[in-house]
Amino acid sequence: MEQSDHAPVVARTSSPLFKPIERQWKLNETLLDDPELTNMAAHILTQHFTTKDTPDITPLTLWEAHKCVIRGHLIAVSTKCKKEHNAHTIHLLKRIAKLE
Image (cartoon, rainbow, N blue to C red; front, side):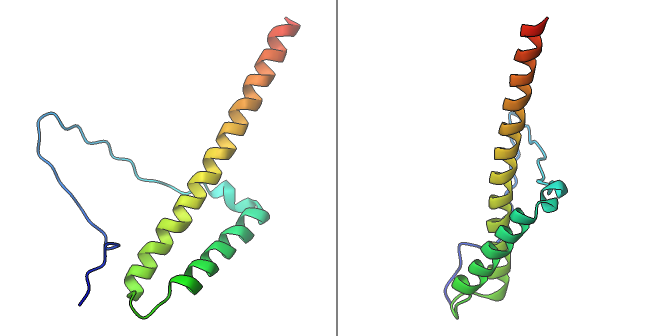
């Protein structure tokens, strides 16, 4: 049986210098209000399941991988939106400073 490198892994360390930071990603649900984004996400997931569903990949691995794929896509979109929002805020603050 071939081992998959896509299996979930948990690693624990016990160093006095190691200070773990709990960072659990949470979906920004407002992203789902954008029909263009939800259509793109549906397309990405359809493509993922179509191309990756092969006999040598277990259903569990396929499922775990799809979560990584969509999470990565949503993080990228969220980061882009945040940068655009921050740039807009900076622009407005500069305009306000000019008017003062």
